[in-house]
Length: 83
Image (tube, rainbow, N blue to C red; front, side, top):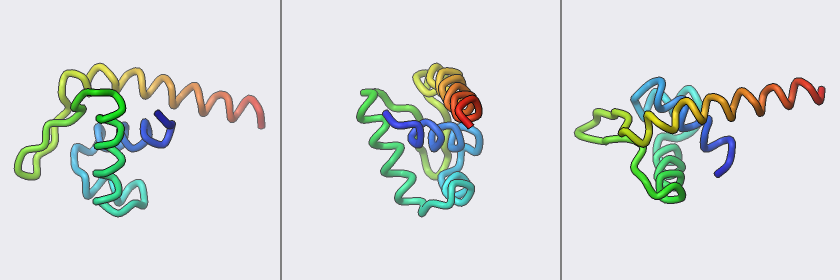
């Protein structure tokens, strides 16, 4: 799992829209979809329900979100500390 995957996950969890999340991340939407699918495969769980253009966090996604936020905050703190 890479920090960028957690960033992608966090933005998608905030927007609940692949197109808007991809725009915010400056990615193509199919690329974001592949990255999220890869993260889900690596973790062995679905993080988002995808139904007819609607996106919602699964229970696993809801559990991962605060962890991802902490990990990303810690990474930012480490960068700041080392600067």
